[in-house]
Image 1 (cartoon, rainbow, N blue to C red):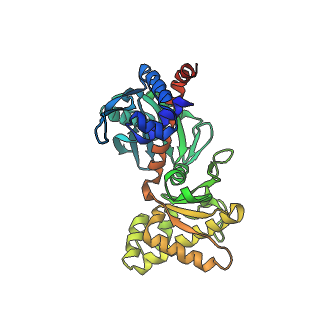
Image 2: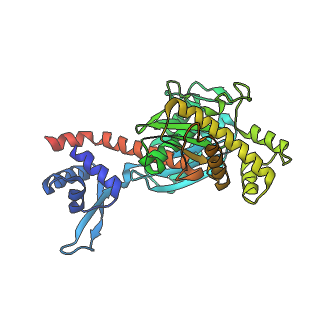
Image 3: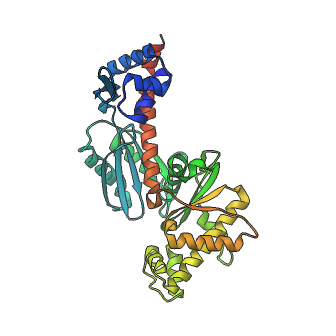
Length: 365
């Protein structure tokens, strides 16, 4: 327990003196000195300069050893791949991105991006967290537009990177970002609603992300909504295109173009945004009747000021029937990557704690 307390403190606050670690952990000077001696012997910590800012003799600072390695946070969307390499403190050490190629090559392409990042941050790769669109089952199987992959993607990526790989739904990671460091920190429960190429949800109840037994929880764009036929998405790129055609705008324009036009006062664009917001609020109403979250967090394209205003209007129109609260994400369109980085750093720290568990046993003896 003492070893974990010291490692967590160093991961949380960075280079620290013994006195700072005593204050952070509540451990005695003797206990801190014992633990640091053991951790230094196991190459878990290293000297990181001296503290000359305080009175008295200069105190040596220690930090997590750079050889502890890195974790990679990966975000794969429908058009591109983004890789961020983080250390145990969660600090970003390198980044790289590339267009999404053929689906059968994405494991190799991601591994190449990770290798590119590792040139700028030398050290072992301990863990990879991948954010993916589509349904992700508890055992890492992905079900997207190509159908279920039977875990083939994760298996291929593990073979390339030679370390554990965790696959998670992109919206779920966005919800975790809000729960850990965003607007969800002060909420007992919330549902994050993200608009990208479609509408997805991630729900946190009592601080726990709810994925569902098969990873299907959150596929809210298929929630029945008359007059839309059952099984047909109520909000995705095709819906945006159809509404644009209906209102005399270019159906090939993506949603951000219509949102910007709405902000500039285009009445046709406003009609499109109003209809999309109405559909999202009705989805939120259905979720409310089932789980009654404290608030809905708007993420992705839904954080555009024009869309937020449209959601508020649609919610106000239904407030006499059902009270719902909507708040914009703290991270906007970056919520998924923020969540992936947080989970990657957490997984790296857990592997670090497990690696030095035996040291804790030595200290206890």
